[in-house]
Length: 134
Image (cartoon, rainbow, N blue to C red; front, side, top):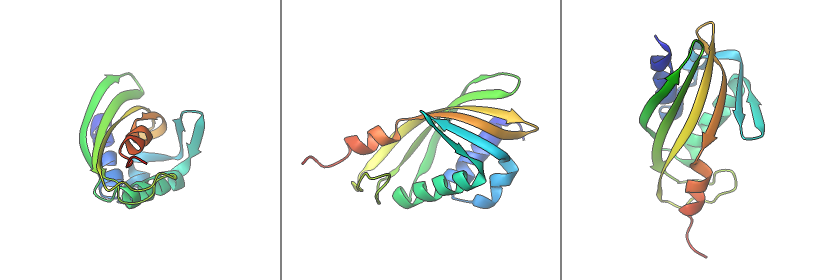
């Protein structure tokens, strides 16, 4: 599987289907994710993130993945996701509305696995915009 196929496989299996058994096939044990000023580590983080996503947006679908740039060991890409906000997510109450957002991701590969990622996501802003007016 090439890097683009690996990214597509991981997004579909982990985010859309919630299949955690594929995590070791795609992500290094020492996986690190950077999101803003926060850093998350390991397979346990990937499992928590996927569970949180599938709980809050149970019908989440990967609408589009577009690879922007590839270098020797990195892939810069964006994914567009869509689904219905059904449960509280990070303190934002469920709106019951469909949300669609883009994540910008840079994935660094080492020995055929994703070892590090930098992520910028529009998800929280999209969830807030869909909240009912007070």
